Length: 335
Image (cartoon, rainbow, N blue to C red; front, side, top):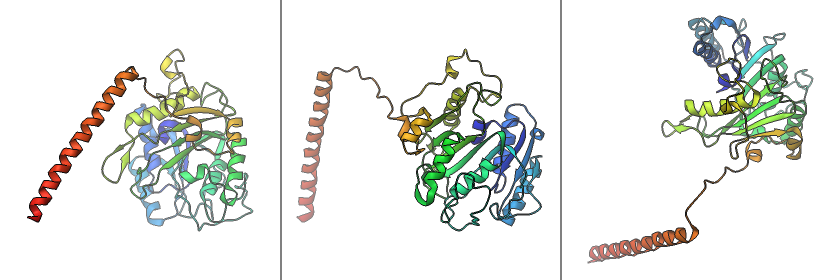
């Protein structure tokens, strides 16, 4: 979903917590699907765990990606191994709510406020923003609490991010997307430039798109939910219509009514910065999208009451019949 939303076709792609390199592989698959070469992307990443870092290097080699994962593994906060790199695209799924992290209050990355010592969520967000070039965009998976938390100054940082007009889109996702945790998550999307141009034909300065996708997804087993291709297309198609782009990475045909954005109650809403400020800078999509429109019901009210009453009385009768059966069976047991 992150890749389809950002459409990384060329330039520098960065992941500050790259794991085994899955985000990079997805970016390459996106290019393959659109008949482009993976060599058009330059990959930059950093990973804390040595074993995982070695797996990422192997993964990039297998997929023929031009990758720079630095000379060794390391902590992104303690030692940024790509200090001068500015990315066109950033794709990241940082570990949620880290309580013990290398915090330096004087770090120049904390342009919008010093993150609290007990939670690194806004440290990841600000690090990622610091790595975007003037036309860059980013997609980040975060814990839901990041959208509304006010503890440790997080609310003030979020307000500064909104007022700087860096937030492009917020997507609330359903529960059980990860086997490691059943909690619901969200995705933040950032852009340094929301004006009309290469990244979209519609000027969205001063606006944020909110998408509530909590009802999407299909359970693949008892523990895990997956977003289907149709679910991803609904989310990303809504964003591209709003921004004036689409996932074929070709120029959008504005005469196609299906590509024209419109708010959808219960699912999508384009909010102004003033509306977000009025909501105390909370970025939870449910606050903005409202309730879905109820389906029209053409059944006359008198007929509906008669039908529902008949169904209720039938259930009462069945309940009495079952109660009599239970009494009879209990009597036989006692006898």
